Image 1 (tube, rainbow, N blue to C red):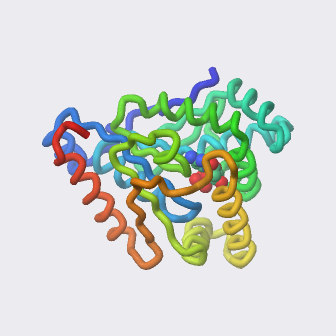
Image 2 (image 1 turned 60 degrees about the vertical axis):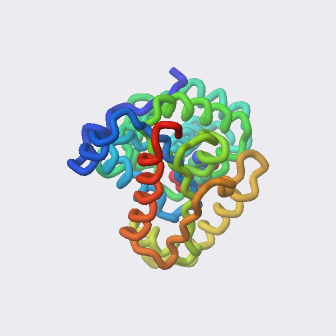
Length: 252
Ligand code: DC
């Protein structure tokens, strides 16, 4: 117990494009790091890239959310970093890739839907400020990505988890646009626009200003501002970066 690993093989979901990409460059298995604030489109981009290249998609925010859910359910205070890290060690968090997104299995139970509640969203941001929690998460994530062939998305992937990742993307967008995307994704939020936007800004502020591994672009990350871009345009830019690395020879 106490480990987190992908509970499946994203290659099973790879389409023909992914297969031809992999066949043309056998042995090239990149680490693709995607960081950015909530609602910037990281998860959608990561899922599309993982499918295209036959890579495993690892959504690290889901791991913080799973720990937050367990803390809420077991009464561990969100302010107690040591107790939260101990809770993480007693937990089994599995990310199971599907063609849509990761399913999240916590201690054998699929909790994917429950992780999206506002309460868990807020708690995940609070849980993630604690250094002992982050140490456990980072160690787990490094193990999960050790073999390459992964698209890992979160807040500190290019800066802390995989500082040597071959491809680093920092995806951002104006807060209003990110808020609007959330309403479209979660119809139940209709009518609560200003509350959701306030929550998004508060979470941004906490994620960007925490002492340990704040949300910041790695110096060598390529920043993509998707405020005025369509998903296809963002995807095309990311694919261009990846293809450049894949075609650059075997050194990196
Ligand atoms: O990506 P997300 O919204 O599911 O992430 C939930 C919270 O987890 C977010 O508020 C910040 C935190 N997080 C983090 O600190 N580091 C990561 N690599 C991923 C998420």
